[in-house]
Image: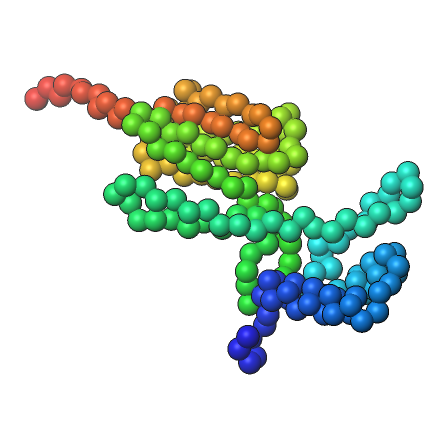
Length: 190
């Protein structure tokens, strides 16, 4: 890492895990004591990813989820496209959980339709809200706090033709493209 540059989340996690692994090799501890120590020595930047919930057995700490990924798309005649998704982003700044998790989205451009495939793990069907205009598809879950994504289309679509299914955490939306048939109007000369 360059001098004076703030570490990324990946560098912080790697350094933290290396220190903890070395510590465990030197001094094996009971699991509960080890977890307490791990939490105490956790970098401040990662503390936002830890929450506590009340359970019948008492309080439980929940770590994460840490979601980060890249999707690569290459279509004939177009430049390759690389998109990030998840609730963390690599950054030179302090790490913080993203307010919304950006789901993995794949837009398949067929001759007459678009098919949009979205991963929405652990989401109830009743919590999914879909809105479509001629230019884009807007996907939100619940109050829009967990997942939220607006997907623009290269060509106009016909919103009334949209159909959606949701199964095993995968949302599929099919929308017909607007044929763009131009309406002709005669103009009389005066």
